[in-house]
Structures are given as C-alpha cells and as structure tokens.
Image 1 (cartoon, rainbow, N blue to C red):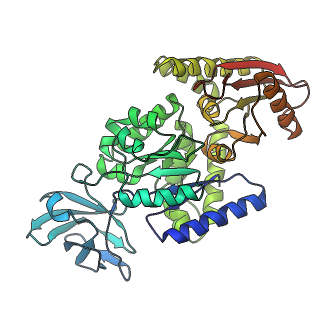
Image 2 (cartoon, rainbow, N blue to C red):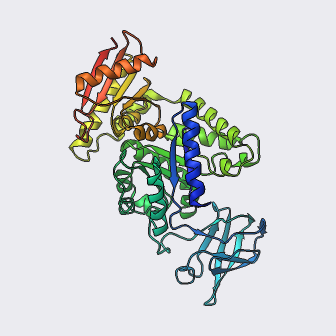
Image 3 (cartoon, rainbow, N blue to C red):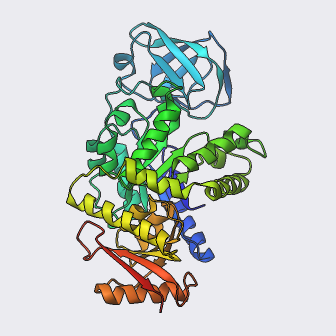
Length: 447
C-alpha cells in the first residue's frame, strides 16, 4: 500500500486522528513511505442508519423524510434539509454506488414517496445520490472546512475534495500550495466537473475518477470513455490520476476477484492511471491485506506489459502541442527532452531534484523506462510522491546551487544502490527554488 485513505464520511474525527498517528508510527517502524489522504465528506446526502440490513424489492414504495433519525424498511430518513424543495417528481435517486434506484412518484408537502426501480440490500448509513444540479449545497461545506483544519493540524499529506464542480471549489479550501499544505485531490463525480475538467485539474494537485457517483450522474455507457478522457487530461497536465470505486468489489467477501475486475484494474494501468484505489474492499472486507496484495500483483503485472515506447510518442504528439503559458511550455519541452535523452543513452536513472514534487510528476507522465528518483529535502513531498507513478524518493538535507546539489544527489543515489559508478544518469531540476518550471537538464556519469 502506497497511500492510506481516511474516509471522513464515517466515524468520528478523533478516531481518524488516532488512526493517522498509528499509520505514521507503523510506516516509520517499517522504514516505509506512506502517504495519508483524508477524504472529506462534501455535500453528500446520507440516509439515516439502518439497525439491520434491509432488502428493498422492485416496486416497493418508500417514504422519504428530511431529518437525522434512523431508517427502516418503507421509511428513509434523509439528512438533507432541502429534500422537499430541491427534489422534484420524476427524479431518480440512487442509494450507495447506484445499485438501488428509486423514482420520486409523489410529494405531499411533508415527505416524498418513491418507487424502487432496481432493488437490493441496504445497511449502515449509505449515501443517497441526488442529481448534482438539484443540490444547493456548495463544496467544501462548513463541516468539510472544520475537518480540513483538524487534518492540516495533524500534518495530513493529501486532502480529497468531494463533489467538485468547478476550479473555484478547489480554491475555496484556502490551502497553501504543496508541500507547505496538503496536496488537493479533486474528485470527479459530477457532470459539472466533467464540463469544467481542465480548470479543475489545473487548480488541483491530483484527480480522482470517482466512478460511483459519476456513473450515477452520467449514462453507464459513457462512463468508460469519461474515465479514459479524464486520465488522459491529467497526464497531459502533469497531475496524478486515481481510479476508484468497485475495482475489486467482489473481494469484500470472496477470496479472489472476478475476471472482469482483474481486467478493470489492468486496463486502468494501461490507460495511464497513477494509482488504483480500494474502498469497501478494505474498509469492511473480510481480508483487507489479501485484497491489497491482489490489487498490487495485478497492477505490477500490467506494468510489465505497458507499452512505454508508444506512450511517450503519443503523449508528445497528442498533448504537448498545447501551451498554457511560458512555464508550462518550458516544463513540457524539458521533460520531453529528458525522456528522449534518457532513452537514447540508456540512462540508468532520472534524478529529479524538487522541493514540491512538481518535477517528478512532470516527468512521470512520460512513463520512462529508466527509474525516476525524486530527491527532495521536504518530508511531506516524499509522502505526497507516494501517489505518483514510478517515483522512488530520496531525502536530501537541503538544495544548494545547481552544481553542488547535482553532486550530492548522485552521491545519495549511489549510496542507496540505485546507480553505480560509470552509469549514465539524467538530472532534471529547476534552476531556482521558485521558478515554477522545470528548466535544467544535465546528462552525467555517476562518479
């Protein structure tokens, strides 16, 4: 596991803070790098808790009432004050990840009545998907900001922002740029987010393709193509992409995934995703460690079959002709040159010297065959890069002038066994700590 996700939609804040500290202690004791991501609830509407699992059958009629009470068969308590004003007759509402769907058939002023179109079993405190264009809630919510402050105080590495609709939602977090602040992961799960995708990616540190709610907002036949398009834009703009939801869902109870699930994980890797994420499989599954091992083995095998040569050429031809300012153009040209040069001279490694991790993420989109070594003095950057494809991080005490820093980087990489004397190495960096672009490439031999 490279990143641990704390889902703040469930449990109490104190529990999550305790778990965060436990994760850090365990990772340190193992000598492992582990990023920690806090996933904010966002304006997600939830149904009051069921005392026990309840099965909803097709054509069952349900009464939906606003409030915070418990739910039972035939009556759902919905934690959204705007339920009676925002939801209209004919709207379709989905429970959980969309396996149960209801249609609103009556509105009597104090409650809604809905007929079950697709049934299933509900338990716990599931989400209720209301079409995002109906919701009047904004992102992040006041509760999100409260949780965000607590997570920042406890040095969390990443913040996942739920139900993002525009770049403005990302800016409203008010966070300092990484690594001074956590990396913002914008979750793409609404139609509005798809329509405003480039602006959201530009404002974010990474993107999550949250297929559960996105699959409810959009037609199911469009979802695979949206997933590919979102990942493609993330790669073009140098941001990591996470593919999430139901990746190994059957392993909540089963000892092995379905063939379709295994293909889904591998195809996400082939699409260029930086990370694949588990949810219920490890939150409530019967053997979380086995699920993680299974996903890791599928992803590693897919990496072996990845077409690195074609990927870099396609990225250069299809995406890097778009210029979004001088800094972006400089970074595109320099990372493309690094990828090409490292391939031509059979470089044993690409050393990326970076405070923020920007340089590492910029070269990682090319999927070079040479190992990427991210060298930084920032502990949080090291943990944030745990989500980036192919990055191995090395701690450096400080960044000095370019010549001194390159020499120190080579010595560190050599001491840790990544390169040997005489190896050809590409060294990629910015010429100053604040330039905002990757503008310096040196091809050297390891002394």
